[in-house]
Amino acid sequence: MSDFGVPEPANLSDLSAQAGSPIAETSVRLALPAEANAIGEIQVAAWRASYAGLLPADVLADLDPAQFAAQWRAALLAPGEARNRVMVALADRTLVGFAAITPSDDPDASPQHDALIAELAVSPEATRAGHGSRLLNAVVDTARADGFRRITVWVNSTDDVLRAFYTEAGWGPDGAHRELDLYGDESVRIKQIRLHTDPGEA
Image 1: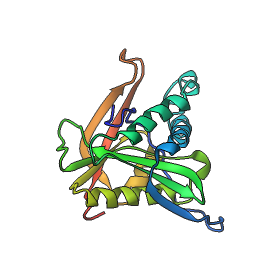
Image 2: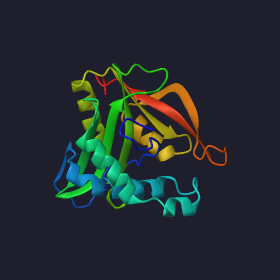
Image 3: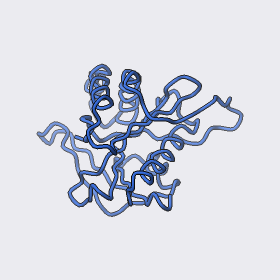
């Protein structure tokens, strides 16, 4: 679990906008507690897309946006650590993605110097419009301003699209890997690798 009280794995990548697509007015800013419902909806939609084929269909169907929203609302109202940040991406006035960053709690990390992207998700209907890239840039800028020296993120080892999203932005593997036992009974295990970047160079 991350410091935000939500499960860490699962991210949804976003690629460059296709030529000829209409361009909406876009922005990235810090999230508001009133946006927790939209964040919960996006996280569930993103998880269902990125974990299809990895998790049983009934498990994905049972994901409850309201439960995620309640956790995000609590985190936004009382973030605890000052460097816990949640940012949202907007297309016009519609919230289409979000990212959460926190000091890393990995065993080999320094919470003072290492940040962790606990979640980065874009609504499946809003991908390929640059929102993920804008969120990632905002994460890097925020981490730099907060004094972090390194940023890390865990990605599923089989998610080539997501890995390419990060590597094309200058991130790379740092050699760390883990295997998640989602139910605690070894019935569903997901292998992940860790990517990192230096916010001073990204």
